[in-house]
Picture (tube, rainbow, N blue to C red):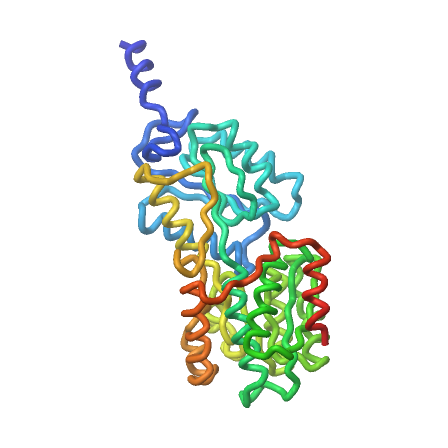
Length: 364
């Protein structure tokens, strides 16, 4: 009888990535509850990229009834791959992480555990093992819309706008993924005003709000009245600087005004909108498909306006602070992007010299 039970147990192991992900993986006890783990290559609290992913995991728990866990791996990159391997060896059905920085090691771990499903919620790398589902977002397109908002604001008679048609951009690092935002932002701003200038700074860090504030103050003092945050936790310093100087900002990844309005409404009211990657709903959708055996792994899905993967925050602050006539112009541009009437360049396929030329073309 013991032998028969062992045989039956072995036959009931987890199905492959295109099968249902409802039982525990190798080494775990049998259960009908979906088990999903999220590994953050950093720490929570950025009110942006990582917090959006965590919200997606919370949705997986509440809407799918899954057992979930989030693990903050910190900023020491040497610990990431061992952590991936340790967690993958446990009985999680679905392992989630995100970012191009982790993609190579994440894929290497996935190849060692072919009976588990791995989801990379944001990577620019197309290649993926057969059990990995990669996602990326049309950040160039949503940044185009953010650039249009910034340009319309700076040339308006809004109370915190000045007469200088100069807007700002703060990136975490000078890397392709960040410059995809930059190029779209510049093109969107120039679509509104071909003569606009864009001050560009890179913090060299994604977890340093003090550095973000320092660089933002330099921009605001130079005549910039709107800064686009593409710097993760470092970008929180932009909002501190905006409050100090009574200037505007644009958030990224999440609706950052909504995340701040309860704790600091004065600061939140200066965030005109946010260029949102809908990471949370993308994670929920991917896990739901995996649970139902419908997730097409081994590929990368690009999420744009049509796929409801990106958008700008059109919250109460946007509707009350940003004038209605300007909102109408933004809506018109958004429709053109959705209908592919506007083609936005993508820095991911550009040479460094091309990006440098674009930056210099709008340098104040």
